[in-house]
Length: 353
Image 1 (tube, helix red, strand yellow):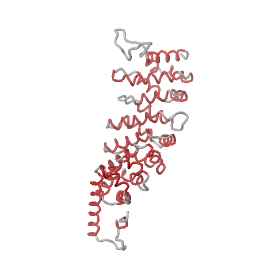
Image 2 (cartoon, one colour):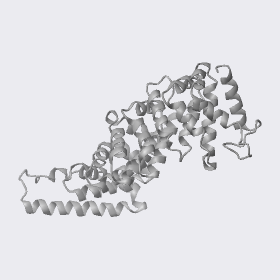
Image 3 (cartoon, rainbow, N blue to C red):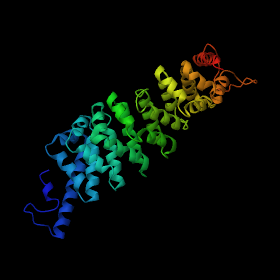
Image 4 (spheres, rainbow, N blue to C red):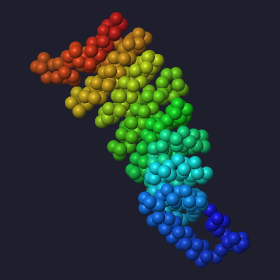
C-alpha cells in the first residue's frame, strides 16, 4: 500500500533510529491487529476484501514485515476474508495473493503456516480458483502444499494442506488433473500420507484425493503408472473404502485393465483387500472383488491374474462359506451382485488356467 515505502526508511530517505524502528514496528503490529479484529466479523468481510488498498496493505505486511507477529496477523486476516464466499475468486485474482500465500505457508511460525494453509484449502473450494492455483508459477503452490503435507510437524497445517489438495483434485479440469498428476512426487506424497501420517484426517483427505484422481487419470496418460503405484502403496491402509473404490473406478475403463494387471504389486494389493474378513470391511471387499472381475474381462490381463496365487485365492474363497456354515467373506449367492461378479471372474479366468 501507500505506506510500504516506510518499512525500512522514512519518506525522505533518511534511515530511522532504533527507537523509530521499534515504534513503527509496534504501530504496524497494532494496525494489522485491528484489521484482524475487523475481519472476524462476518458483515465486514466482503466490504474489506473489496476495499481499495486493503488487500495490498495486508499482503505487503505478510510478504515483507520482519515481525513474526505482524506476519501472523496478516495470515489471520487473509484466512478470515477467504472464508467469505463472495471473496474467494476476488482474492485469488489479486496480484500478490498467491505469491503471499506461498511465502506464508513456508513461514517459520507454525501458527502462520497453519493460517496460510487454511486460507489455501478455503480458496481451493471454488472450481474457478483451482486451475489458477495449480498452475501458479509452474506448480509452486502444489509443491508448497506437498512439502507441508510430507514435512510439517504441525498436525493442523498438514490437515489443511491435505484438504486443499483434495479440493484441488475435486474441482478440476483435464489440464489441471494432468498438471497435478505430472507434478514431481505429488501422487507418491499422497500415498505416503495415507499410509503413514499420524492424523486420521490427513489420511482420509489424501485417500479421497487419490480416489478423485482415479476418476480422471487413465492410460496412456504420462502419470497413469504413478497413480497405480500410489494406489498400490495406499491400499495397505484398509480403514477407508476410498482406495478400493479408486481401483474399481480405474477398472471400469477397458484401457486401464491391462496396465493394472501388469503393474508391479497392484493385483497383490487388490487381492489383499478382497480377502479382508471383518464385517466392517464389507464395502472395501466388494469394491476390490468388482475391480478384479472387471480386470478379468481383458483377455491380455488374465495370464497375470491366474499366475497370482493370492488373486485366485481371493476369488475362490469369496465364493463359498466354511463347512460349519460360518460366512468367510460374503454371504455368497449366485443371484447377488457380488456372487455374479465372482462367478464371471472365475469363468473368465478358467480358460487361462
